[in-house]
Amino acid sequence: QVQLVESGGGLVQPGGSLKLSCAASGRSISAVPMGWYRQAPGKKRELIASIINGYETAYANPVKDRFTISVDNAKNTMYLQMKSLKPEDTAVYYCNIDRGYGYDLWDWGQGTQVTVSS
Image (tube, rainbow, N blue to C red):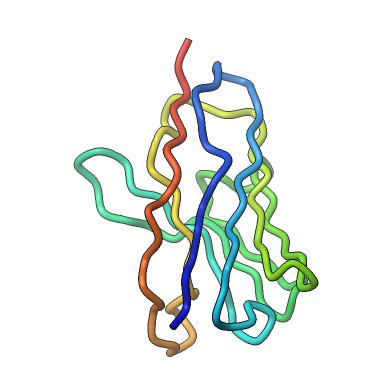
C-alpha cells in the first residue's frame, strides 16, 4: 500500500517562496509519472505540475515559470519549489500519480495548506 505524506506548507506573504515535499512509501515514485495537485476552497482539485522519468516536466499555465517540480529518487521524495507566490495560489496541495497516463491514483495524503496573504 502506498502512503503519500505532503509537508512544507504555511503562511507566506505575496511574492514569497515555499518548498513542498511529498514523501512516498510502498512504491517507487521514479517508476511512474507523478504530479502536484491543488484544491482551493470551493474549487475542484487540479493538476498543476508533473514529472516523468525524473526529468520531463510540465506545468499548468497559472504556475508556469514560478513553480519547479523535482524528485529525489534516493529519498523517494518529490518536491515543489514555489516562488513569486500570489494570493490565488492559496490552496491545499497534494501529490499523487499524474492520472493523464492511465495509471490508477494512489490513496490521497492529507495535503499541506499553503496560504498566501499579507
